[in-house]
Amino acid sequence: MRLRAFYYRYFQTRYFNKLLLMYIGIIVTVILLLGNFVTRNVNEMLIRKEIKFNDIVLLNMTDYFNAQIKMVKVILQQAYLDAYASDDIFYFLENDMDSLTYLEKKPIFDSFFFEQFSRSKDIVNIYVHKKLDDRVYQYSKATIADNFPVAQFKYPNLLVEGASKASGIVIQAAYSPHFFNAEPNGLVYSLSIPIKRKGSSANIGTLVVELDPQGFGDILNRLDKESVNQILVLLNGNEVIYDSTDRYYNTAYPYADQLKGPTVDIGNHRSLVSTAVTGHPRVSISVLVPLDSILRKTEDIRRTIYTLTLASIAVCIALILISSSAFSRKVKVVVNAMKDFRHGDVTKRIPVKKASDEIDQIAIGFNKMSAELSEYIERVYLSEIERQNAELDKKNLELRQKSIELSALQARINPHFLYNTLEAIRMKALSAKEPSIADMIYILSDLFRSSLSAKYVVTLEEELTNAELYMQLFGIRYRENIAFEAQAEPSILDYGVIKHILQPILENYTIHGYRPGDSDNKVKLRAVREDADVVIAIQDNGKGIPPDRLTEINGRLDGDRPDNGPGGMGLPNVHGRLQLVFGERYGLKLESIAGLGTSVTVRVPIVSTKELKEHVESIDRR
Picture 1: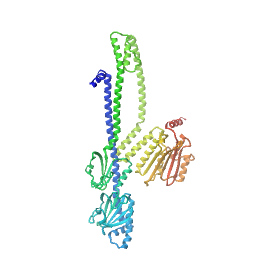
Picture 2 (picture 1 turned 135 degrees about the vertical axis):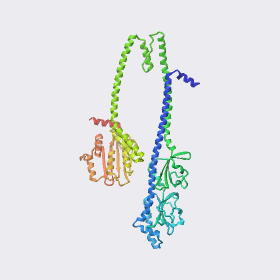
Picture 3 (picture 1 turned 90 degrees about the horizontal axis):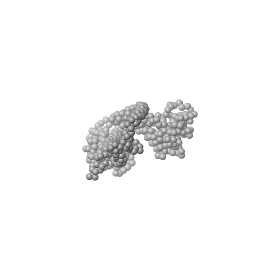
Picture 4 (picture 1 turned 60 degrees about the horizontal axis):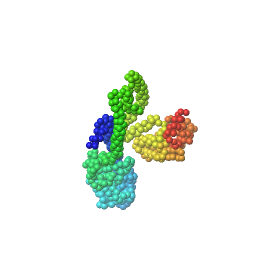
């Protein structure tokens, strides 16, 4: 009843309130639909991003496992081909030996297998089974060589049967090793391969290499992503080689049948599944991502949308009550005046303080109707002409403004066309499963957008971001054989600098300092405050600069020698721009040792972006 009375009082006979109520319904509906659309798209974006990351994880882990299989094959292959040790190794395996011969051959045999630990840090133990005397020779990083009868070996199933004619890799899931050189309770998985007599298919022994499954975990850590993903490496579908959660070792994985689908239900939780088959057909790698962990990231968005919806409803109701009250009072005054006029009181006037809305316009029109007809027609006619002229002038002004906006838009067509083209190429690379190419195009697009920006002054944070983007692009190109580290004191990130003072320095390193054949290329960037200056140090471990070339470059920086190098973005150009803007006290300082690396120091004064922009503009006006 109260709701009905409220509706009748405030809406039934009030058109303006009905209109506002309709607007409330439209606003609430639009906000809810928009919120649902945004939430759904964010969820889909996060899922696509997670799937993309999972593909990267699978690719890296598959490559890693295939490399381990290849490594074991290479160890055996080297035993056959090693010019120094091969004859002694196979003589040791194929013959009974007296003590003197044993003392002669055994050190060479031991030395060869000890050397194989250098191939991978994940090798835990190496066992060689000699079929002739049924003994197992063990090699470990932490112990000397040992040997014992097969009967004492905890896992005789790792050894290939003597009658077997197979020559491929035999894989065993995770188990506690016969001897672990670091952690007594650790786990290993093994790769076994039969040792054949030279020129024959008969087995004379078995090579067993035990590997630490944590090597798979190290790959995930190197990808540098906080993740709640579960990584599973399974043998024969349900035997666990590696489990990132450590829950299913030495047991059959209970959800193996569900890993073939796009999702798997584990307990009360559903997870996305991505699975890849390695170079060994019986080994698969799966990445599981709980959907709950993805959807939790959108809770803040949903909460914000609901808050905005409730706030919009509250504001609209308040506006209805306030505007309705003022609107009703003004309408009543007009209605009463019209009643008096209808009863013959042509002198009735409606007081109007300020023509601020349609009701005031009605009141003004009513008052004009009370004047003499001739004066009214003349006044209305002139007013109409003036209004039309004003509207014509306004339309002309709007047309000129639209023309200016159109010219500005046309000037931006080409850059935007290039952005869109780069994005189309990036999406094509993603669809072709080339994420590194897509990343390069994405970074290139950002760098291009920054280059086209008309801003001459940026914050130090923006300049560091552009530098990191450039090094990311270069790192992708050379398959991450370069490490880039950037550190800056938070208190100086908002200070102003001249745009593109760091990229030429980094570009100079990529052209002249980078060592393509090495994987330990490093570039460190550090920005600190020193008194009233900001000092940016860029140091690399590259090729360095020969002394005569270093002297020539420093001479060009000091202005003692002409700049015969390429113009535009060279080091002398950056140095000259800094000294032009800030004075001779500032600029670049270059130090280098040939073969060890180069250090470039950039010194600029502490100044806000606003002050620096005004200073640069004052230089341009001179």
